[in-house]
Image (tube, rainbow, N blue to C red):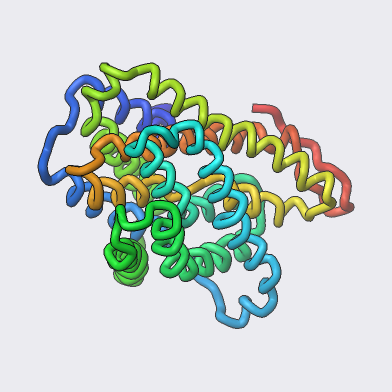
Length: 315
């Protein structure tokens, strides 16, 4: 049983990916392509089981709009604010822009479930966010990076990273994969993303470790500090807890894996260090989820059926 728990613990997989990246590195000309395959596989399996009725969009329309604003408003703006500390470095600033432009992680659905949020709302909002990303991701990169990147090239990759996983998920659904297998597979893909992204910049990490520390601090502020502030703010605003959990993950968790793939595909030769903010964000966000999933019930207890805070078990 303990071994099974280890396989399901995302923190351990991320830590193992960091260790492998620092020990072995990953200097491979096919790194960007391999990373794309890994991301698409992870997203396709993550999307398996996500279902909704199109009529539900009318019921949740305002909440869906709020989630889109949380992702491409709060999350994007605060990601850019963190990136301003690195604006003098073209490579790192480009990485922050790429991170800010991508949609939320597919894992926001799992996070919403774990944190006892509104599951249907998270699924509908995820769909809306990814549809919006087809237009917003190329627009954000064009406005902030100008001619440094072709928006049509961004559009091509965004469609690839959205259409292919969604299409594959329909076929995967027929396999009836066990939940445990999917969890382990998703964690394995996370390990590979950390290993490839971090391993490709191993020399930079050892030569400029102070910069990496600054990136970690910036990402911690963007996730942990922002997340706690938002929890208290949503409570203060009187937002229903189930809705607040969905808004929270939308406002904090970017699809860092997608930003790593995009950045490596577009800037691997011209700006190789641009991937670092994305990789550090991937690690910190995974850690944030692992910690927040345990902490959130303490700072925002779930309501019982009578409308009062329910008793929660610490740990």
